[in-house]
Length: 132
Image (cartoon, rainbow, N blue to C red; front, side, top):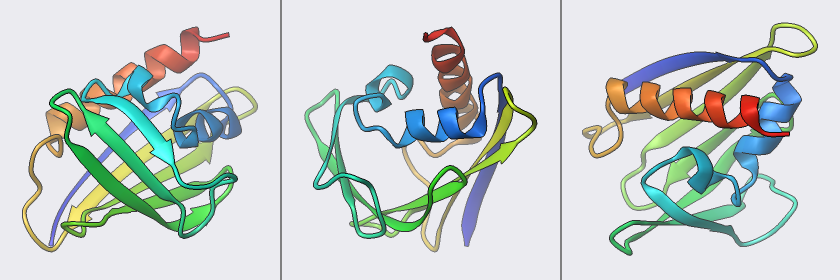
């Protein structure tokens, strides 16, 4: 199994960061490779399908395979069984640690490099800390 983990401390509550990251309208704000993201239903729950489009017009599909509001969610990429787990740990009323964990039985490709994941998390931190 191939896997990567990265963490970032964000100066917002765990619930605020969770709500921001689970909202498909926000994804293009912090993931440079995504221009639009949509869901098949709200509110989000296990089985919800997220579809996002990259800059070349390609669509990817992810299913929520684990979900605990305010605490964690896991997305599984349908076509190649990549798993991405977001875990939100409260560090007080206005700070949290977000852990991003990706794994697959195959190869981690594309955006799944340590450098790219750290860059995405740093952009998330910047965007959410500066949003009012």
